[in-house]
Length: 409
Ligand SMILES: [Fe+2]
Ligand SMILES: [Fe+2]
Image (cartoon, rainbow, N blue to C red; front, side, top):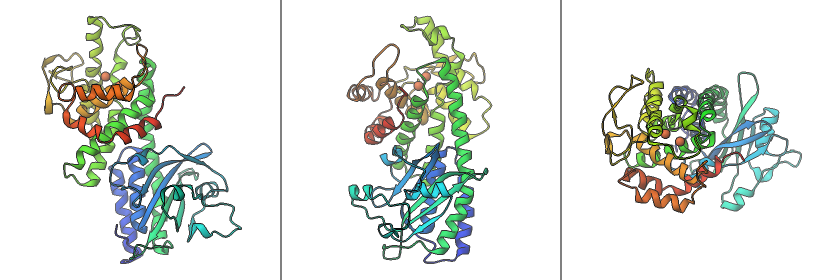
């Protein structure tokens, strides 16, 4: 990671911050936006680690965590789905930053003056062998003047990779980034919220399609895509951009169920073959909702809604469709293999896996082992073998996602 501070001026830092806003505009979901802001802030300060904590009621929830010493920010890791929070109070560095809306620049967190009310919590250092020294903790303030998040950077490294105090110019640039970042974060959260509201609407109709289920399917799909894309030679920021789109649009895979009658959706027993034929039309209804695609996100949402029940061997539904502009579109042939858009092949696996390990009205949850057996057995039949092998190689991440988005009890 190259820092601007050892080679260049404040001016270079400011131009860099302006360029970041352009990059942020290409991202849609809140998580991708937070990830990018953290990465850029770390590069400006040559910081080895950092995190962004979002304000949720009276707590700060860890939303993004990077640490080059412990894990790669560019790779896939379960720490992205860390489920931890701290209270907003006077006693932790982040809590104090949020409560008093004050930037803290600390040279050595193990030698804080005793007069400070906040203390550094060494638990993670002890557990991991990492040594936190310098910390920069900044509040992100929204347009209403309230703190909406805290950006924390850890260990600004000098040319010899030694942790030093955060340099003045870098702090000025990161403050500029932080001042504008909150608007981008709020845009991302609005997009997430709009999607979740749409999903709540379908949840009213189909109780199996819960908020946590779609969050899990979105996150599993994004991480499977990430693993597959790493092999493809695409550049890291393009991977992150597409991963963000897949995560958002995968959540909408079953939105077409709003067009299916309650009698069928809420039927406790097995569907008759006529009812099943009606149910299958949720794929066409979903695609129809995105028929006037005005963005790449709409196009992807349409492809996923239409194709998430296609099978790799061509025995899925709805097959090849005559004209998706038409709500009464007919199937005119089969669709198999790589003719099925990649994102739909990924969601097909993520959705089935999650359904198998979840409780449904007609079945108890399966164990992970049983679900994995089915996935392995169906590789090359129901599922794309490359998707299956990417999925099987990130089971620790899949498990972290499952732990983060649990059904309310
Ligand atoms: Fe579906
Ligand atoms: Fe689903």
